[in-house]
Length: 136
View 1: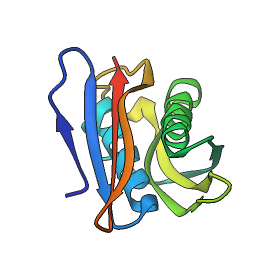
View 2 (view 1 turned 60 degrees about the vertical axis):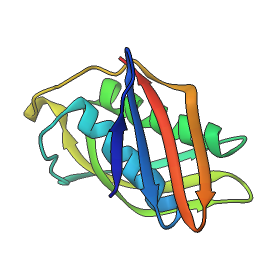
View 3 (view 1 turned 180 degrees about the horizontal axis):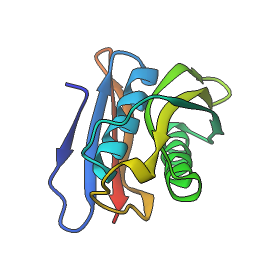
């Protein structure tokens, strides 16, 4: 399982999984985008992404916020990310997003922002788990 949505009274809450932290962050990207549009996004365009953080939760928050910024300001809907690297010592993330322009897809919901509410990034028995709540 890549990700699952969890019950939340007013917003969108998800938990994403991976055997590496990079895979868990990739799956959080997929959860976020599937919250915006239920259609399969084509990977015909590419954009570089770089974010940093003070800790893993801040890195996840900044990553999700950067994705939302690209959706809102550039109308770019990511479908995946290649060459995703997370420097665990410097807490820097980089990669190449693939995706398409959003005017070709039906919007399911508008996400205002990521939140720190109930956010977690942890490694349990060799499996990475990330959780976030998205404000709609």
